[in-house]
Image (cartoon, rainbow, N blue to C red; front, top):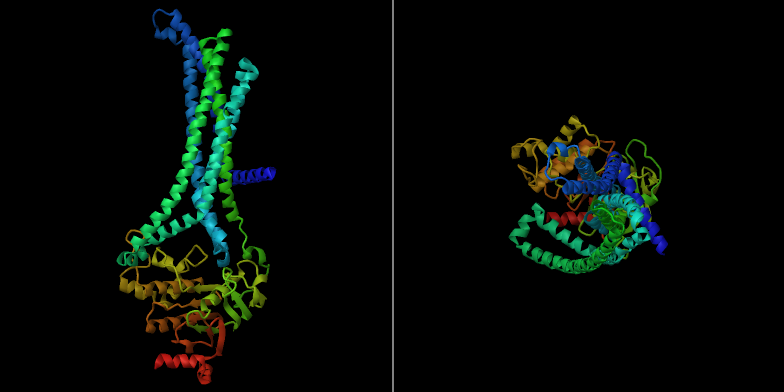
Length: 603
């Protein structure tokens, strides 16, 4: 069990070092070189300082007056000059080490956060909603990322101090013999006590993940400017501040208890270690007197004893730190290597060019966290290439779930979903989404320029000016530019300086144009006119249908009866089922659910 535990730690350390040296090879190697040179210089400086003291002592004993010119020719000046040169080299190495560490540290933050974004972008909603995944997203930025860089630094410190210990130990051993080994034992009590306390702090941190999620959520809600009106006018801030204080006080109380234990143990046991070390120094002094060492030799020996003690302590203590950090770092690799259903169940089929047919047969679906509650119940649904289909239904009818299923955000377990004639699980990863462009009911207001809000959905770096003009016109973006007296380079939203906010209806038009700019084969619109007036909605929908054309498909999800007559087929959903389907005229003649709904709306 213990062996397996340490094998795991070594594996995490290997992954961490591979991450650092694989990405920042030149900087890491140069830092190691400066580390090695600096360590050698520091060790050599101790010997030179001892010689300087001895040569200077001779001058103090023999010279009756000071002659600067004559002093320049002495060994005292020579060793002093060497000490200065060594100090300069040491400082160059120190500053270079710090610069390269700063570079690596910042790049680690950049790359790890980018990797987190990439991981989320490749996942499905079913995966990112998992509690474990959410915990990792909360835990990693707070605890793991910083420790990746510092763990690499700790490894460098250990290697440097190993060199120091070996060099200093050999020198002290020549005088003190096997008694030198006692120095290595002095550091053990403190490092063991401190390591135990660090483990307790780590365990407390693991338990605090839930608290961090709550604190992050409260802070995000409170500081999100679009929330300000409701929070301020309804004084919701009072509740959020109380809850934040209560949660944070609970977290900090537990954390402070652990920190107090850590510093108490460190103080007590470091004092014991220092007491034993200075007792050993008296022993070194006794040996020096017996062997008639010079003052400089004793000073050098004293410094080497200090190096052995201090470096041994740093090695053992840093190993404890490193072991602790590896537990935190492990969570980062767990997140990056996390495998959801999309990683495990996809096939290798590549879809051909053209608009695919969509077919759902006897699909029953329940959200993974509520398996007993069926959101979809035996649904049949199809869209032929080029067909314009509407899904109509009220709250809780299953419309939003259909969007998530159609876009591949959840795994199909019961029933069948074919896309382009293939079951979606046989498609290569990403093939489904490559064919789709979606406007979600909960669309995003990007605090970028107006143009960026549209073209952000495009894969190409270069903006397709012609396409941008078409989709802008289709969603009536020129009206926004005219009425708001802005241009398409104007920053929107209130997050950045000089940003201009828009009405919800205008933001929704940008979301529609963004979907169109994606320019795929299947377009899905989920409640796309929640904030758009009826007349404008009809005009924009006509433009969208024209843009989509005869060869591409459109799926329109709505709770509004308006404009349903514009579609080739309508699916009426209620309680997770398709209760009616047909054209507008067919359903009106049938005088079923949709007919009754229409009559109730117009009466």
